Amino acid sequence: MTKTLYYATIYPMNEKIVDMYLEGKYSMADVGKAFGVSRQYVHQVLNKSKVEDRWLKYKNKDKADLAKYGEALNELMERYRNGEYINPVVQQLKIPSRIVNKFFHRTAEDILDHEVSKYARNLAPQPNGCIEWTGCYANGYPIHPVNSHDRSALKWGWFYANGEFVSVKNTCGNRRCVNIEHMEKRLVG
Image (cartoon, rainbow, N blue to C red; front, top):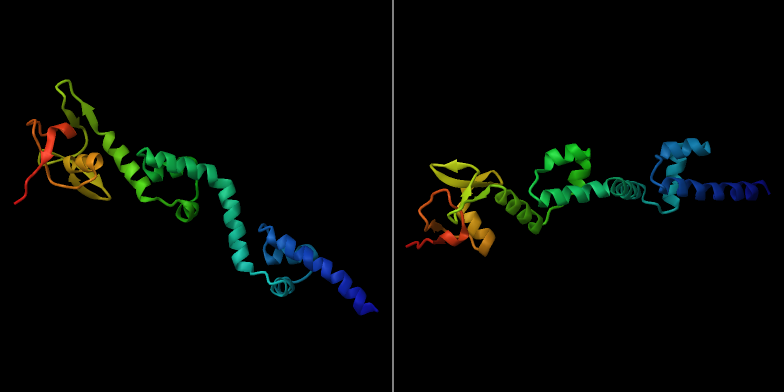
């Protein structure tokens, strides 16, 4: 008789242990303290209940992190696409680096939007129809840094406009000009 009563009182507690642990807020030790049992007992209950504790712990933690930082990550992506650099925005929004590393995934389209926005910031239209480059120069020619590599701003402008990365030359005679209408493909041969 006492065995039956013992199991009748233990099983509802086991269900409560599993439920409390699955909330993702408490460790096994915390759950054990709440019910007056050891961490090992909680571990056994979770194993018997077929709960994959590590996987669920991280899954629940991911859900909580996304709920907490989801809007900030969306704003980070939008600002990145508009040409802002990641680190200052992350510091301003106070997003932990582990969250950024885990959930901030850039597609090729996002990277292209970012680079085009950075490129567009360095353009200054002139009254004569030229669009002069206000960014960096090397040997008197405009350069556009992409992924720590300096390349011709003329080539990048042509690529952003036409989708092909070819050698181009300026037809207006203004070395600073990056206007697509003032460029033509350079014949190689």
